[in-house]
Image 1 (cartoon, helix red, strand yellow):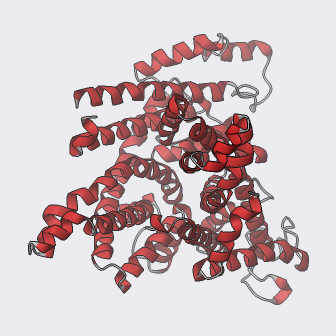
Image 2 (cartoon, rainbow over the protein chains, first blue to last red):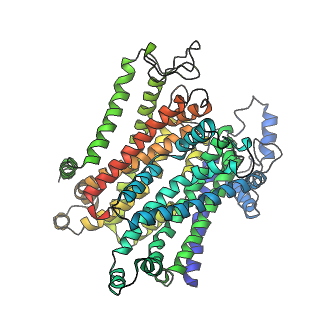
Length: 307
Length: 284
């Protein structure tokens, strides 16, 4: 197990470095500098700006400087938000995004497993067909279509919930964004749970348990549930990436001041360092969470960890 | 074996499948209307008319879907959006298909250590949140139409590579490949002339599942204002426009949203149906 854990951890480091190098190169290979769009400046001022942001150094040197900063958690200054560091901007916006993401993930896991199990246990019934149909819709229709439609129905017409972050306090302003963010993941998890539960229920050892006269409820609880849940664990990585992508949209639709909104503002303003910093931050987050999922998998399924 | 021969059995089996027939008909209908509709309408997608903003959908003046905040005809704009969205998605899927088939066929056919390294790289890439890199690309290289294709295609090839590799592994043990090797056909020759034509059926099926993914990425970018730029439009950009005028003119949001949802649903159901036809065991 220890060998497996170390292997996975050392495997993640080159991926992370590759990601950082790729993102850094992309930004610095850009035609023109970050300040070209502003008014025309005299060469002296341009030189001063370049020196202030260390843009006059050769590229490898800039990269090493950036990496050193990264190791200290410093992502450099923002090009557009004067007097702010990218790390500060991310740090200020992070709590809201984490709150949204954690709530949406929990909702997705609970509702997705519940729906998937219900469908699997009454396979081919009309409930099963209803769940599969809704799940297909949930997968097909993107967050940026569902979220505005939810606002239209629940905020504009029914007026049950606020349409935006500033429109209401407490829990009411969280409900629409969290549900919108969770919906596609609920759909995926429901489909996975259903397929995997049906697979497990038709396996030989479940048939044996049935032949021994065990109640269906105890077969499910003691024999079928754990193996049926294992494939879900490997979906957690893509789910996390999906929630992160979705949070960008949801924060934009509901006007939530999270990391995603800064990302979009940065992208539209061509704030290179901010966008670069957030891409690296997101990639690091996804890679580390994937690592955690892998290690958990190794613990829960000894066949993998022992290999 | 020719490319056509590879899809003929799939076509034959698909004819009896209701989902496939219904979904492909709806998609063909939408595509046909998107191509022909603008020619029949008296309106141009970019022409503004400040005298008649926010007109309700009606037959008068041929504003079938009403007009937007600048008085532009939503019917023509929606059809343009459909055209742009479908075009981007098909080209992008073509790019991902090219990369995926080449990568998967080489990994599968060469095998051994090359295969192991190539597939480990795919595993590593799977973990990355690619959409953020695409957005980064969009920021750095302006909003370049061509770049949208390439970027979206470049992120969608991973699934294709895995599927093609799996198929190649089983194909390369078949007798006709042995025969080709015996008479001295080179490795690239075998991959090009004997492996890829036989992959074609499966590849076409999985491409119907890649297209909705590409549509999703394109419309997400356009929704965020990073994709297709005014006065051109795409369904994602139209949904975004509808969002800001939602209280005054809900149809500006509803119509593009429903069209986009319909296209995505049809592609997904079609892909699922075709996959069942090709590989009944994988049904989930």
